[in-house]
Image 1 (cartoon, one colour):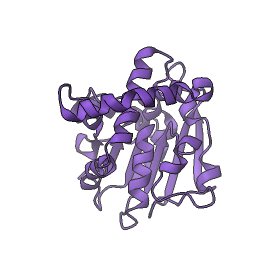
Image 2: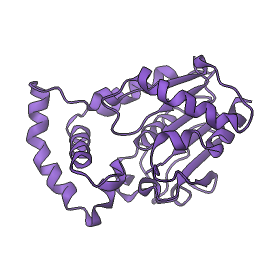
Image 3: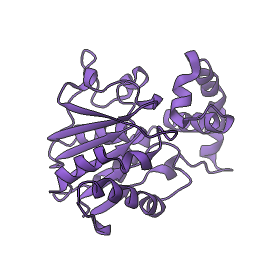
Image 4: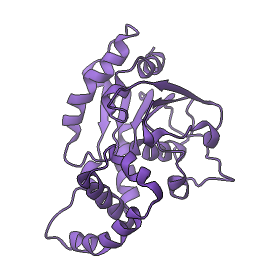
Length: 246
């Protein structure tokens, strides 16, 4: 099994696990290049769940989704300032908004979605997995998987562009918050949260919600503030993974 498991974020429903690995393995290697550590193909596995958010036109499930979509679109449009929507897609475009509405609607109308996503993560983790790396929405899913599996021996948790401290997500976490604080993710020994300048999705520090054991690092991803590749190829991410691998 893989030594590093990567969990993708939102808006990857039109990709697949092999395509994402082909894009992200070079970025991971570039991050480790800063620290003279090499990575084999078999060392990395991508946890893919994007297909669960891909619409299936003409089906009964899609009909039910369309019935719920209008109300959720209205609710999202009414969010103050619109920053939450812009952060998810890092673009204030109609296309990004439509994809966000689809994603939120599926999350709200599929009662089995959380179990389906967890079923994608769990088979990829074994005693040889030393690091779990997650981006954006994937950090929420990865956090909940780790927190609910304290028997896992994953040493290092790396979160990239994480919205885990967003007030919007507080009620969705499992295990739930207690007095506004989140549980430490299982048996993890190190949690490194990498945040980019200008990344609205990661604007709030995780330390206030999860404690000062979280190690936070600020990076500059340029105009691609929330994109996964600049996060993965940064020296900060590479340092966290190099320590976990060695």
